[in-house]
Image (cartoon, rainbow, N blue to C red; front, top):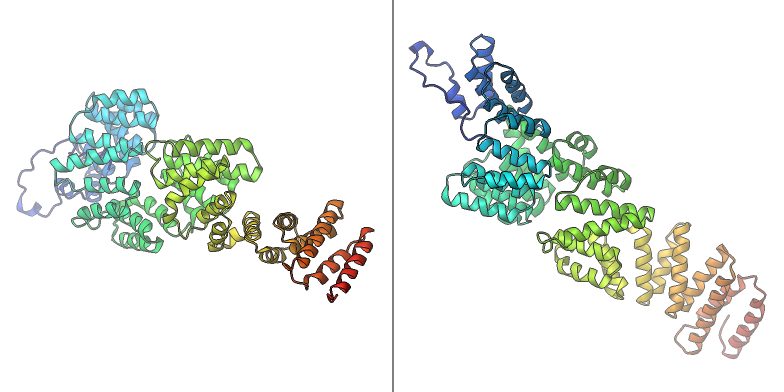
Length: 552
């Protein structure tokens, strides 16, 4: 645990041998050595209630509460001690650590400043500078760090928090080389590899620690997260289920984390009940709630959750980009789309993310919004192997393929999509219809229209079919589309389109590239119009049919 002490704040005096009748009485030192902090707290509270409390016992009480994750109770203990005359200045540092873990960073800073100048104070202020985004101050405390275990662990944790995972790994590996018995450092290395998407490596490193401490909450949670990435949510959930069964009452600090991760592993089930309560407890809760809203098409709710967030990690930058892109498309806002493009470019162009999968996705998104589809394909081609069955990826990939004229590949990608929600979107239907037409499959585009309910979107699809079929000389289906359009909106443009398409069909019949059966269809289509030109055109067509022995 970050900032947790490796040694007790106050050393206990050696306990002399007690009379034989007291041999079975519990000893504080035994509880502390076994890290049974709940037992230690119980004993200390009993001594306090019995009037046997002392300043030393209060130190131990705060220490045990802190290491049990009961930061609020530890804070209250240290606040009580701070009110005493001749209070040990170290109390302010311990109080500052409690404030830090409670997210009370301003109070933590004030308490730390009142404590003695020492390595712990420097480490605490170092972390607070990171929380305050005060780069100048951060570098000042950075310079005070020494080549000792605690300071180096603190530096590694800041690297981790700033997404400098490789730098953190380098520090942890150096510590492990010199201290092979520091098994818990393997957990931190595993967490870094997890963040770098090396889930199998993370699992391998983690196993070193889990062999010795199979009931570790933090390590098991990381293992579950690896299983989620490598396999599926059910495999991950099984790991946490086993952990919950083993977990004692002394593990309260992990309960929120487990509740949060179970929602993620279950695909968002219970998100609205769990995530809102954890927004100020677990940083990822806000991001996962945003993702939940985006998946459920509640773009405004997702945007509102992110609008006041000052991004500091790649994930936050990416989500800021996504919510702005989604809102920009929904509201046709150029401003939001431009902001989204800038966020994507920041992530995709950064040295730490440019060669990662999310980084390449961001650059593809940036170029997508700029409508530079050749560049989009450069990035999507490099990562397509990771998203073979991903509907969203295939939809975006298909759009880029269609925009560059690769209609056969675009059609294949669109037909791979399984999501009913995506298939109902007009963007999907219009792109698929466009691909069908460009691949000389106009009938399939027409069948796509026939399955739609009458709406503004079906009207737009009709226009797409009519115009694109006409351009690609698939005149029969152009005539059918213009016919329906003219009935819905008797515009001269639609009549002219229908007339031209019918003449195109006639030309193809003469050239033997269209079946003579289509002749009857164009006659029927023309007769459905009240335009005065129809009578003359039909008369000419009948004469043609008679001369060429075409049955009408």
